[in-house]
Image (cartoon, rainbow, N blue to C red; front, top):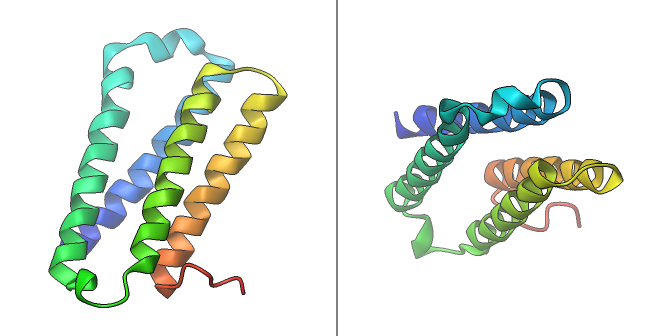
Length: 120
């Protein structure tokens, strides 16, 4: 059950991120609404809590857990790039957006394969 909750928050998180980027380009005034400022933080907090629960529930810390560390590092990259995307304009914004999406995809592949170096 927790896995389904986690997957749901993953979809909500990426959807809200992409949605906010689109809104910032088309209707930036809408992003000033209180709900749109708070919702992403609530979604991402619940996503992180469900992920932590899965780690302990799955007993993944008792074996090789380098892939979990790789996901955490990529998550920090995703968050950092997301902040740049929401605060900057122009080419830097779009490069950061591509980087954030790449981090998101990397996290997903590592989650499925349990291998931080799947590309080697």
